[in-house]
Image (cartoon, rainbow, N blue to C red; front, side):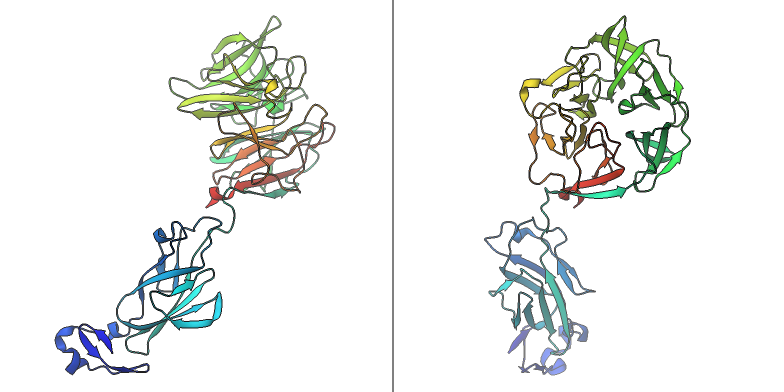
Length: 454
């Protein structure tokens, strides 16, 4: 006998005898629609040996007959036999369970039965009329990739025509759109290509002007405020308001090297950090947005001047610039890390004896996943690297990555690449070269830590 609204309704082997008038009475308000309702109202799973399973929220898609958890459970979660808790929207005679993990095991659902959810489970609900049925497919979603792994792909192959000797990529606004500007040096001249940041595969050349000769330190190209700047070997500084048309700036100083940009921080105004020369003496200096220069302390003997990599960042509301590797004034290769919060004086974070990574030049440094990533570069023998080092303490210590965050076999070891991080948390690596006497690779690689895309 099946109890319904405190009334007894007899049924015989799938056939329900409804006594709507004499048995239920006109005051019971039991409609034909309710008697044909085979919908599931709530669904949950429990398994004491699976942490967090009790708290998983399931969505019931009545239109398509799907039951699933929108927020996937952690990678590596193993769920097999679990108790299934179901409530129905109205009345129901039976819920038949078919386990895809055990295809020949259809049975009537009982709350105390354990069900194998390692694969989808079909639940066929029969309404109280004994005729109407509705079938659901219930699936427990579990992340299928390790969330901390970083997957890489060759995003663009030969995006730029011709042979590239040097290259630097920065972000810039072009025609009101955020874009990548790729400056390249060929055997003929400097050229400029741009691509919207939403699609770094398509590149168009822009009519670059004002960058004549071959003495520009392209690797130190820096954007500060509404201008971009490039130093030259002789101490001249070039500037451009749009990144396309360049002119010789006249700062009344010999600006030898550009080190990076300090953004706005607590009690800090943005400045461009540089090294200037006066009577043969190199000094740290910084320029504000009004193009006013302030001279700082003399440059340390071991401070790198060329082929370093730098990164601007904010920590605890203060702006900094970090600088790693490169060659000092005697052309010696370094493996040091330096930082500044004003551009006028720099602090040594790791010295040559630290041994976190070998001496290198042409590495790439970027803030990613709330950490600092140091990739690639070339050592004292001129050998290129594809190692990745990570610092979680703002450059004081570094840890070599050897499992989850590594480059694939197809990625060639390289130095002197440009790196950018887009709004979708992809790290893009542009070009680079495999040795000092080769041209730049004409390719773009893209990678992302899986959980940053969930």
